[in-house]
Amino acid sequence: DVKVTQSSRYLVKRTGEKVFLECVQDMDHENMFWYRQDPGLGLRLIYFSYDVKMKEKGDIPEGYSVSREKKERFSLILESASTNQTSMYLCASSLAGPGYDGYTFGSGTRLTVV
Amino acid sequence: SQQGEEDPQALSIQEGENATMNCSYKTSINNLQWYRQNSGRGLVHLILIRSNEREKHSGRLRVTLDTSKKSSSLLITASRAADTASYFCATVHNNAGNMLTFGGGTRLMVKP
Image 1 (spheres, chains in turn orange, green):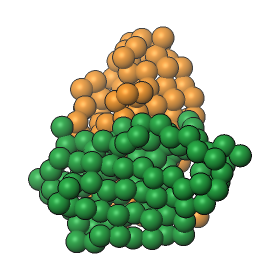
Image 2 (cartoon, one colour; image 1 turned 90 degrees about the vertical axis):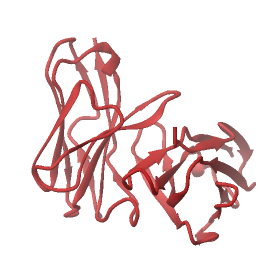
Image 3 (cartoon, chains in turn blue, orange; image 1 turned 120 degrees about the vertical axis):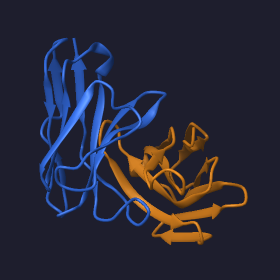
Image 4 (cartoon, helix red, strand yellow; image 1 turned 135 degrees about the vertical axis):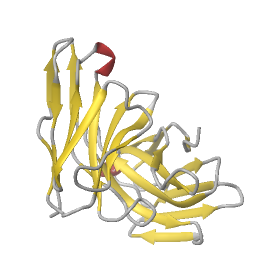
């Protein structure tokens, strides 16, 4: 069964810490995405990547960066965590672009910044 | 915003009944997708319908698309308690670099 695995289900970090959220897919997918999900705001795209070492900003990239050194791994980095980054973070991947293919999502990481 | 909007925001039905959720969007699309999310979990892709299609079926799911009205509906027939979840429509817009944009979701509760 194809999988997108996010390294942590729950995470608690302190304000100002550098936080790494890891996402690994085993489907040889080209495309990977990071979303955050907040009540009343739905899912918002933070960053995405169509290839190794390639990244594109989504709708809300401020305060985040990403790394894609290998095809199967896409990391989201919070350079200096703040309380307004408390959220559910969802990683997704797809074989083709969204014009052709549905996304496979990970189970999510619920991050709390205190 | 190009975000789709689901209607209703919440729906409660009895097991065995049909559930209908609607999605509207603002600008022309390449395709529209429906996803399910169980509480606190990731999203699961249910069905994709292209702009030149009007209806698609998958098991107990039926999706329709009316591009003239910029709307779609998801019908779940003979609902089960296990269908309790949030359902999201997501659109790929022709002028948005093929990115997927999600609506706010419909929370469906199916009572046994």
